[in-house]
Length: 298
Ligand code: PMP
Figure 1 (cartoon, rainbow, N blue to C red):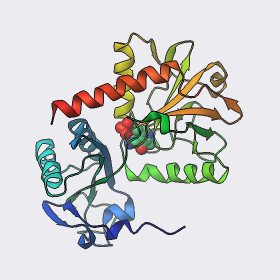
Figure 2 (tube, rainbow, N blue to C red):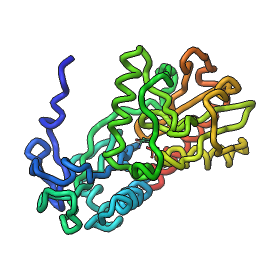
Figure 3 (cartoon, rainbow, N blue to C red):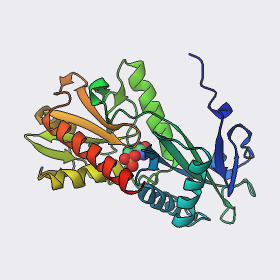
């Protein structure tokens, strides 16, 4: 498999207040963010040329940094303006934006409260399948992986912090090596948590059940889906869910900015109805919400 030379792409990115040529963007290798993972990030979708739920994502970036003990040097309004400046230079109709912040290179030691906070914004074209769901294949998950979501006293679990992601990519790699698309991750207590980069929902007798995000990211897509389900008068239960309860579910789906809504056809040996009736109602509601939000902001 040849690696995509992503760092050699054409275009621009926003780095510490300046728009720079994508392939010329550079940071020093002796950076606190690289060595000690003092780094947080966001992923935002672009639909209809407009960033979707941009304010919510930037506010979460501020919150993620605060949990790691550093402050971003740009306000939410400044970062919204910077994002729009970048998109004005490099317009994208359907795509993805990555905001990222890290502690700089002034000091390479654990104790470095006075390091500068660095900030970057990159955007690129990235397809959506939300509007042509019929082209999507349902996914198969395995729960048979080596890793679990950690105790919140062991890791900053509610921050979108880079230090949490080795668990995600190692689990994803294990799942794919086993012939599955992704992993269903349990938490430190053995409860259902989420997938490697998306939240999980079970449909049991017409109601939506989803784990409480007390040791993993409370996804912005997750929060949107819960709101939409309530508007549709679908009962929603946020609760601790044991893996054995999967046998009671008829449908399962994942939510996340990147994956949008993924229907699950199998977890380990157990089959589920792909793109079942409740999943489809929520996909349609989400699609309408995306259209309304991005048209209203356009
Ligand atoms: N969990 C993890 C570990 C993630 O990386 C993501 C993607 N950011 C999510 C859940 C879903 O979050 P969101 O809906 O905000 O993209």
